[in-house]
Image 1 (cartoon, rainbow, N blue to C red):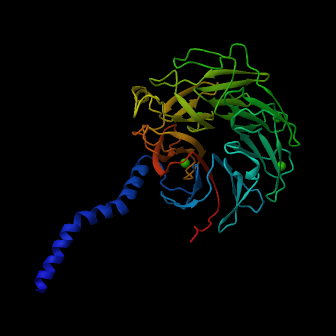
Image 2 (cartoon, rainbow, N blue to C red):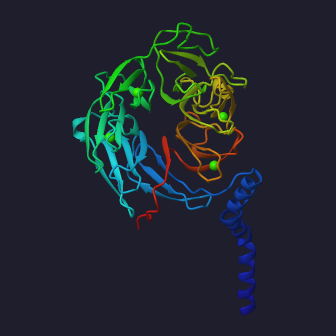
Image 3 (cartoon, protein in one colour):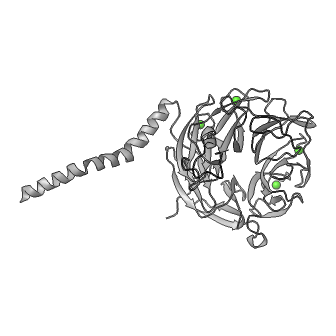
Length: 429
Ligand SMILES: [Ca+2]
Ligand SMILES: [Ca+2]
Ligand SMILES: [Ca+2]
Ligand SMILES: [Ca+2]
């Protein structure tokens, strides 16, 4: 009888052995395998910075702990964009969120937890009115961080901070131009922060700061030979209306003037020739050389460490409204994210970052693993039914310092991401 039991136990173990081996592989060997692959790619497989991901109804904070898979905690705040800054000057980074149905939200980092409050009372605004992006800088030079909001169906706003997490907000311009994004830098080199608002359906706005928290906005002037819009074959179809989704600013040709790189249906870079901007299409070396398709976000940084600014672009897949799943058009241009290496003259040469097709929205750039090479995180959105071949995992792409990357998945279904240092608050019990 005892022997039967013993045999039964042994049979059970033999029966369960494949499952146990599978579990062991998943728990121990797969992360180890990933680490080994990264090691042989020349990438340090440890994440030391923190990451905050945002989707429409929730967020996730992933605390870099030196492992490849940081511990993440959910935050019950959703919205369209997210940014970080120390708004109460306690040396901890706080989180600011554009929360389109609930006003803009500030989540103070209390070391152990986050305390979230509305900066603008949600009852004063209609849904979608405030959807847009945030930028953080000291615009009135009082050493306290201020907020600039690109609002979708409301005038853009500047909120001056008092260093104690209180803000006094005013409309930055009267335009209600469906602004989607704002980028800050000193464009006219007068020492004051300026803002470029990316706007769809209206001309983009360039707003010059006066150093006391007010702005004077005007239309951007272009050089005569500039083309502002191209068709899918790269042919100029200039309609004299400069609209973009997102913009990043930096000196791409080394003349100290801040240039513009932006995206909408194309990726375009505009050199700042003091008075006027001269724009040209950012070209790809690949088959889709005339057109990236629908680029969604851009960030500048020197990814191959040659001293010239490069650009990373997130891409949306091309969609055909009539198709149930994936179209030939989508297969042809499946939406690979792009790295475009700058040559210091304002020209770029582009390649795919990875061959995983994503619906990439926001992105952020930083040295996540502290190896001195810039890394990129893409926030990738879930698209039900329509585009079934898309991977909705967010991607962390470790830079190798030569303009190429090795990407791993990190959570899923996000539309914005920011990299920062939030300290080490314990996850909630
Ligand atoms: Ca300030
Ligand atoms: Ca300025
Ligand atoms: Ca470079
Ligand atoms: Ca790195």
